[in-house]
Length: 176
Image (cartoon, rainbow, N blue to C red):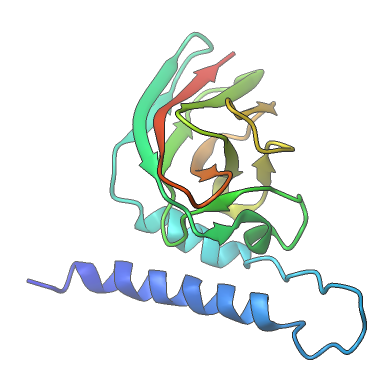
């Protein structure tokens, strides 16, 4: 009966190992310049997206809106996942995304917003981990607009600005 949990456990362990290696990669430097963490490889992000087992929202028309209640307690610096490109702020969960949505039509844009009870951030992984999008700073209502989004599945990681409690609220994804 524990067999279905093994792929998720293995994926989570691989992601954590990759993050540990990325975070420790520059620790041997004797200079005063901080090392830029290496980004998590796209295939690792893609496996994390595939391991997601929650509801998957689908945007099929420009007028579609998806909402998902979330409560997150991330502990990993988002910039660790991106290697600084883009320089995403905040603390996010690792392992699997907090929510996944699919763009199933040609849209001009997709807007992703989180209305939470504390300061937060958004990090969005595009289809096949090819692109990463995030908001520029920690804010009370993080918002990311993806212009001309490619069709496919997007993983959303909602972050928090500090480790003083969960960021609880509602994720809103809107097609345009």
